[in-house]
Image (cartoon, rainbow over all chains, first blue to last red; front, side, top):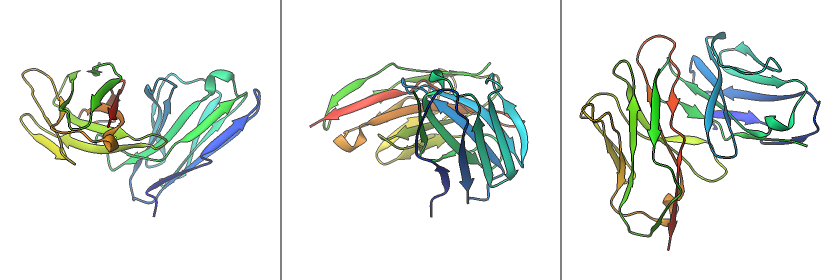
Length: 112
Length: 113
């Protein structure tokens, strides 16, 4: 069983569209994250949720909106996609803060 | 704030060569330190970690020692294989509170036969 799974793995879409990436973890963790990795492999945290509550919200455009229906799910919705949004988005989870983070396999988003 | 600095890559080595990837950090408290590895087309996965000074983390022939006096956590392996080719990330996490994990910029390792 995949511990942290995210869908879709690949997404190609046009500028201006709205898209969502879904994430689920079956590890029983109480903290989930979204990270963005650019073409140079630089990893930047976007959001973190603890027990469905938003605890970290880095400087991310308002077009990005996370939603956590329960502590096992953290979805990412992106409105009005721009070329600069092209990246790999990683969902992750951990038990409590500061412990080992378990990553999903990534969602490759390409905006054309 | 917290930060992690690791050597820039790419690092290219021949198979069976000795590997060192340097990592230094700045933190206000006593962080836990991690090395994550990202193989091509995959997410990051934990390679090893150390939670207090002088601890040595080890896994798959890799090791790193938590050096508080030099604020370092260098990754080493005595004999690399082609299958070790990946991007390696050093990271730290401060205990307590809603702290995020701070990642370094990653170091790409390429091992050639």
